Image (cartoon, rainbow, N blue to C red; front, side, top):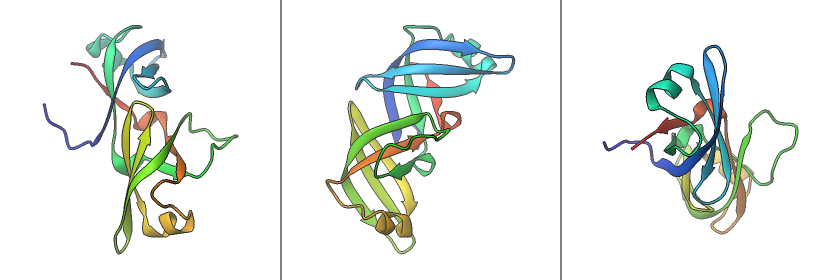
Length: 139
């Protein structure tokens, strides 16, 4: 299957914490970072997710925010450090490619945000991803 979601990071499930309707799934990405996904319990069961399951974490580029440093006191659990490898500024929006350990992410943010943060190719950033915005796929 081919998807329009550009951000597809491979990893291995390390923990599944089921609730009544939703579950949190911790994934160790191939680059060594941990990523948390919050998905329905039904999806966990349909995908057969358990520790050591191989998955791809999928995130739409519009669901990634960028910061210039790690942020403490924030409910967003996924904070992946990286460096900007490509920056394309449009009239209203910017596309930012960020290399993280084990892969690359693309974030689409406003041009105002990109210029306000002083982003440039080579600058260090942290990709912020809410766990509810991470989808999981199996092979």
